[in-house]
Length: 637
Image (cartoon, rainbow, N blue to C red; front, side):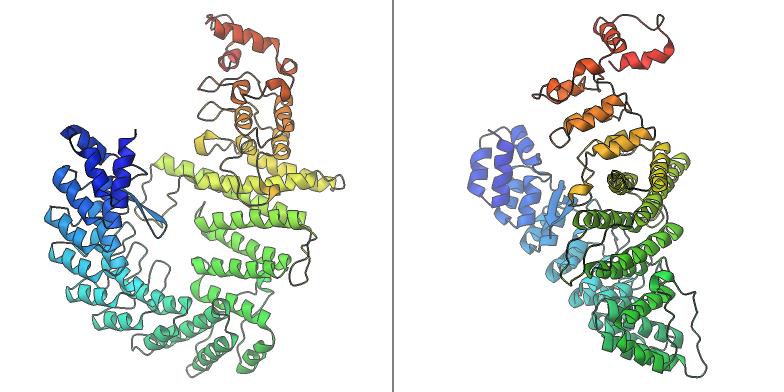
């Protein structure tokens, strides 16, 4: 019987009688072992505090000598919280009685979760005012920030909890403290839309500082579309005329894209234009027209502005131009709304415009962002899914009467080349970071995600897979086929090995972890991609960290793969009897399937293989008897 699970379930379900029944009469060391064990990442104390079971918590503390500072994994709003202390869980869930009990029993009021979030910050997040007061009264430090530099005041402002913000300010909380990315409580308030808290912060000396992206709280309110906050802030003496104009123009762009309110957007742009044209005139920075925006130039007269109402599409392009001018190309919202507009075009059947806008965004991201940026990865993933959809649904009638067009191979090849470039950039950047032993000080300095290169490779492989599928068409131009194979050659030449030491060929032969879409054309294993990679020089016997070759992984995925994949690997030199680090061969991994049901093993067994097996089986000394070049071959068997 699994007593650990019984104890955990009793704590989770508030079944004190069951808990006592299981634990009573047991030796102290056994009780401690049971109440300290984790189930689904959490201990009985942590889960009882999370669920508000006061009597269970009290029993565990009083009768079981449980460690009050133990941590566990819990979920709030569907999100996992790792290494959360019991007090953090009770405070986050709003269980004041349990919070008081834990503090009386000596719980550390400034304990933190894995992200450096304190119980006080957890209570501020969901607006548990009485818990906030109690924790502060018992020594909680309201200036402790989480790993992103967000303080209790910032989160209270962002979540719109006026009483908590007022209470923290009465204790002289640092109103102008910055997070790692430079935003203040005033930024958070402007983004969330609470005018009442905004006025409170200004009363306590909040200033209009710029964050890491050069955004002021005024621009933050414009981006999120909170017109009441914009109208209040532009009346402040510290706001310049230029800043006021930028805010109104940016707010208009938000009304176009986010609120789909063209009339209000025109009104805001008109106000900005009239203000700009007063003496002394404040000229715009005129940028070169952009092809992806259909070479739209910003309007400069009231007459031209009024004509926009007749062309909503041009208005949408105006919004993109305005946003890029004010926010700049590095701000995440600039790329986000370019991609958002492209997605809208795709929904309307204008796939050409979608690809054009997304390509512009991807080009801009690769030019200005660090390698493997989450935004760049997201763009590549979106392209993989879009191309998959178009390949599967080509010719289908869409709701608005448009037909899904066939893919332009040149478009897909262009994006595949950009994906290969991103893999190469990421590989070089990762090697450089390791070489210099760089430890980033801030989250925006570089990418911390160890799987970022893996995801970039997977996205590129899926686009490459789709290209290879198109290659199977006999009518394909020879020169385009050559270009596709050259691009695959460039990818293979990088010799990139990512998660668990796997090469592109490993991924092409493996199902798990490679699916980036919901379309049959975008699923692995892919015999077509494996064949193409082998043609451009991929090593069929490359081993990952577990000693698995692509053939081993095809065995693991053999339910989803076809005999053709195995035949392709074997015909290109894969060894049927190679063992991984667990001593498994292809044949042993496919059991209970018989190997002759998939291939003829005699055809792919050479005398060299048989000789190597004998040497290994009888542990014969061979180092001084055979050439060094054959040592690794023998070791594989």
